[in-house]
Length: 164
Image (cartoon, rainbow, N blue to C red; front, side, top):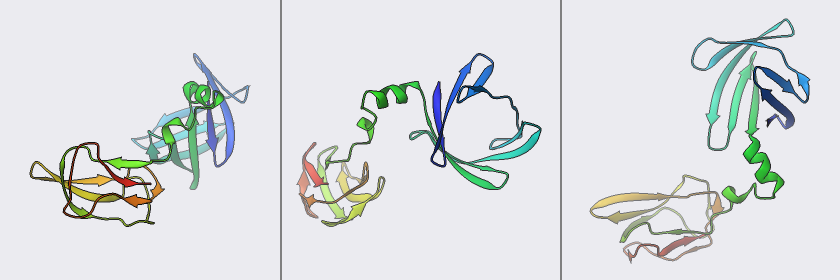
């Protein structure tokens, strides 16, 4: 069993063998994979053309275009539902508190300032280690609270560089 949230409306989906139920009711459909991202679906004698526009497996979020209309779909499997029931559903999405040096090196450049709001993947600084430049990126969303280093500083492994 799993849930799918489509544009803020939730559905319970259960698959036991060949049968599919949607919110407890039998759901009959015929689906054909036309190519990589396109599908043809027939449900209740109506034809639908579905296109997978975007898929983010890490967050289990998908964007579908069905007959020209976009739908955002978030899926939760039985493990996600159990974690949610136990109140542990945000354990993996906790805010980032600090970025530490992954290795000893020299700070070549800082890309952020105190007070900057960063998104996951935004570049924070450049660390030179073993004659290679490494761009350290934000592991999550947050606001820069403090910068513990400056350009030209030598840092040790696990030293706190930026606090959020």
